[in-house]
Length: 135
Image 1 (cartoon, rainbow, N blue to C red):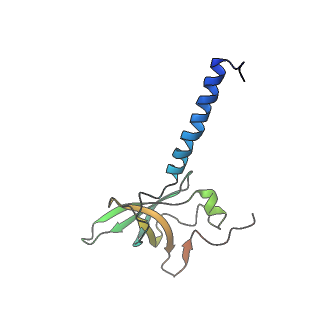
Image 2: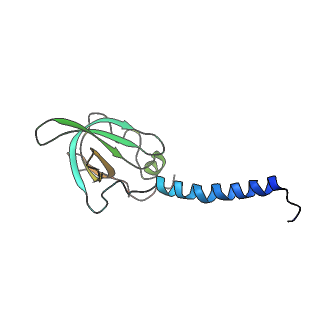
Image 3: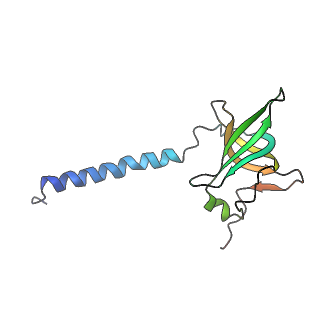
């Protein structure tokens, strides 16, 4: 090890720092700290847009507030891959669908949350936890 050049030694140290530092960033990305995980809220409205994208799906839903003013909420979901393994497709939720969505709301009070489940007017429940398919 004495014959390692200073450049190689710096490269090894830098690589180690990147690995250690990058771990925290990856864990922070998957944090739910922005959401009120101790409670849920149900919002009811009409789907405005469904983003079937990585790394997270997004549901945009128009919800009438207490004064009757329509507000658009952004609901973050799991990845398309995760949802597909549980039977979802990009057409499971479509623009114009009427849904009641259970979320963990944002702590800061903004119009958004983390998706937990949805219920259609006919009672069908759309969740993220059905058994994983063998596809």
